[in-house]
Length: 265
Image 1: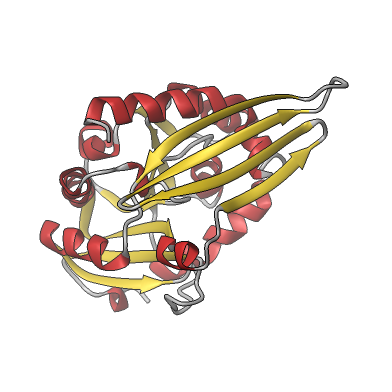
Image 2: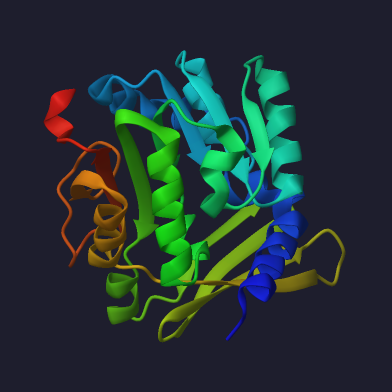
């Protein structure tokens, strides 16, 4: 459908254009405490003291991790998203190092010696090819300390597609409405965003899209193990809830570099 450069340009344009309204769409404005609570248990259970937020968007997870006392770096393909993330960190008063770049170059961007790499919020499906996924796995491996942890969160597209669920979410904040919906195209998903502005008598709208790869847990596991991760477990969320392919709307793969998760449980 696209070569690598076209797919990257499409994603960059999509998120650069969305950056100013992203927090309105996701409802994260004023939601720092809620985001922080979602990470507290994971940090406590794994004992990590530093983390890279790979695909950080406007920075809420990275900032929350910094508020929990971790050394944090945030990486995103969109310069506009990173600009918003930097503003958020300055407002909250935490120190995060921000980097614009591709997930497949993670180690080059942030260096090595990190306890964890977190790739949350359905970010990884933006990598469309097996070769890109493998390069990310290798980069994450090189980024981590021995016994470091990688956590990847993705939507369970097999479940969504089997149920015919195209609507991802409909949200509204004041005069701004956002409709997120999918078109299932075999090994690709077209992720669409309809933005409606109800300020005037006649609504104005903008329709944009980007393309995703609906990765399955077994596909991700194969690439992570090939990169050298010694243990890969699948959960429904960051609280280590058991994953059920027939009911869990998302999954989280948690892998440890060269060891078992029980080392710090």
